[in-house]
Image (cartoon, rainbow, N blue to C red):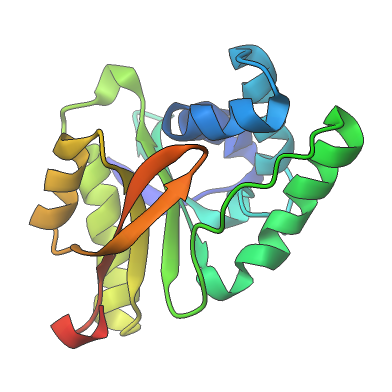
Length: 190
């Protein structure tokens, strides 16, 4: 398996995987539960630069020349700037006035989404992607890494805890109760 920075050519596959992780949020933008429209909405952004879902902010896992997973990560300090094109597009193109809660903030690199192809789940690919991100941002760059996990998903939380993340608070996102987890270069930094 190869883990690498995404390229624009990966955008379609990234969109499909990100949708697995954030379907409810995208449905809120659309105002309807239409998976094809949701995938097209995400692909519009994964193909473009300078937005929170851009291929620029992703790493992918590849097996036998097939992208099988994606992780979307960016600096929390850039959140509002990266989200602005998404909000603007939703308002202008979809007449959507949905404004999601703020997911992150300055002071952390934020894992917005992580998803593995259903055909490749259970192989540890998601954990490997996260470990690469932890090694780069926490170990090498000495930064704090944060993410949200649905309180109704204890198995995902368990994986994050095993990798060293710790709970630091609670948030709401798209009407769901989420737990904010962080990992930093020292326990005190979380």
